[in-house]
Structure formats: structure tokens, C-alpha cells
Image (cartoon, rainbow, N blue to C red; front, side, top):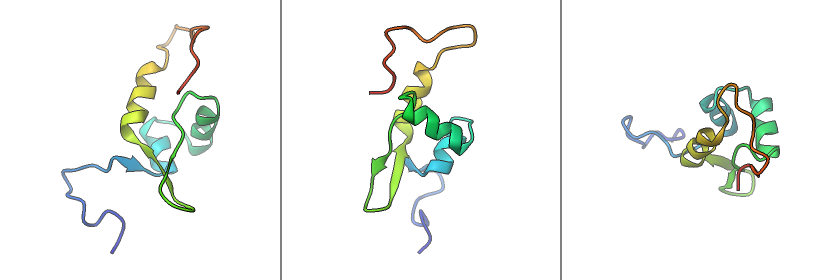
Length: 81
């Protein structure tokens, strides 16, 4: 069975892969990787030996914490925890 074939079309997946997570936050996958390394985006959830995915709820929280244009990161901003 193809991935997510059993998922209702009205129910979006909560966990998404790297490319989809990058697209979700409107950056290329390499930029997304740098944001994760910098702590500005959450780390992946481990689903198995080789499978990992990002939680869209955690991505939403991280997006809400990004500065607006003209704002700087606060010195106390420790990034994603």
C-alpha cells in the first residue's frame, strides 16, 4: 500500500518528511537542515532505524518564534528546545 493511502484526504498527516518539512516552512531542504542545526527548527522524530519525520505542530511553534522582518533574534533566544 502506498504511503498514507489509508489517510482520509481531509486529514493532513501530522508527521512529514524532510522535503515536505522544508516546503512547509518555505525553504529549500539544505536551508531547512541549517535551521535545524542552528536550533531554529525542531529536530526530527525517529520512526525507525532509517525513518524520521517532523511534527507539523512543532514546526508551527517554531515558525511562530521566528522574528518578523526588521526584528532581530533576541539575545536570550536559545532556539528550539
